[in-house]
Image (cartoon, rainbow, N blue to C red):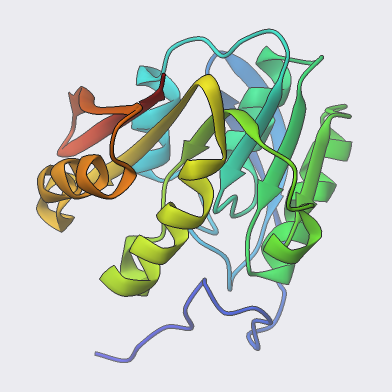
Length: 203
């Protein structure tokens, strides 16, 4: 089977062919642009849909992170729900970041900044992290990604990660609990359609 270009490439070489989609994000209708060379470039993927349906209501304000934003469905949802929040949308893929910026603009969401990791100042910490993490980058890269950003939760902050059950969600929970150590509570928050939503709370 031919390997399609990976969506975690920084600079996709495939042609940037944009399409308009009409999507509903947690009750909010949005018109968005999508393209190939980004994750789930023709729809809201099932894992993200599960996360958007199951995660609790975000706070009205604070500093939020969409870790692995793709074309922006999570960041847009957070922007609709919490217009006073400061939302960072993070990806390695420049095309994904461009689409997230465009989609925020198209939908009047003015509090989303789509950036690469080195554009987030090292002193920025987060009250909320939502993520459909890129499992297919491999375990080592995934673990490094999670341990880079989850420790930047503020006291009282929370992260919600959606992971497919057959791609290791149940083993990720004890691993995160061990790695994060005291001061964090890691648990299964919800299950739906073969996915788990993992909750990470910082005391």
